[in-house]
Amino acid sequence: AQTVTQSQPEMSVQEAETVTLSCTYDTSENNYYLFWYKQPPSRQMILVIRQEAYKQQNATENRFSVNFQKAAKSFSLKISDSQLGDTAMYFCAFMNPTGSARQLTFGSGTQLTVLP
Amino acid sequence: EAQVTQNPRYLITVTGKKLTVTCSQNMNHEYMSWYRQDPGLGLRQIYYSMNVEVTDKGDVPEGYKVSRKEKRNFPLILESPSPNQTSLYFCASSSLGLAGSSIQYFGAGTRLSVL
Image 1 (cartoon, helix red, strand yellow):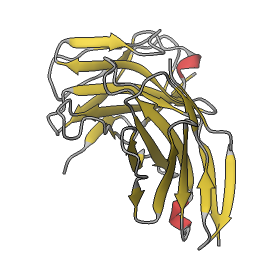
Image 2: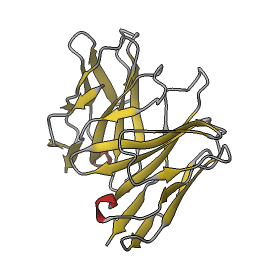
Image 3: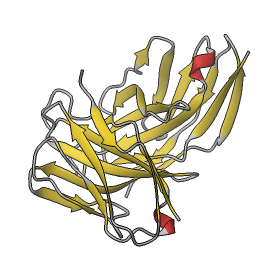
Image 4: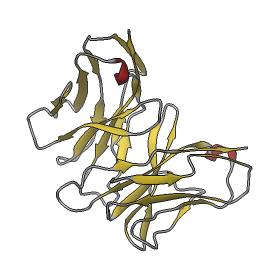
């Protein structure tokens, strides 16, 4: 079974600064997907970024980028130029696309607060 | 607009009173799933469905039922709710085609309190 660990329950960052959220995972699979989801106070789950394990290039989406280290099983999220609207709970998630359940396995989340 | 719709958004009930949380998607997705979110535990899968009339258990299925009679709908049924089912529930859907099959789209969540 896969496990996803987010070791930082809470983090804060000053507006316009850069912050990195950590995520590690454990799997014996070679082909999989990794995700970062954002959950603002509205509780909606919003996909921030996706990484396919077979791609060596790190995914980026505007101010959001990842540092994917497959051998180390690490998948951190970097938020540049932090904005007040980035305040949210961030979840790291793993999925094995060949598994019958297509289950997303989530970490416990990191609450990020952007300070004015 | 492509979306996953859950109803109700908030529900307070009492122990033992049967309830159903509805989920509907308009993206013609084959795959649908229910998760519950609890503090410190992230989201955990309750049940999933790969297509009409095909359902299976996730990690935490005890006390829940589902059905998939139509492709667009995937209701979650609590036949005898208990206080330990107080949680935030999410429905999600995904295509099983090659193009976007890794991305799951989530509903807005249902906050359930069982007294």
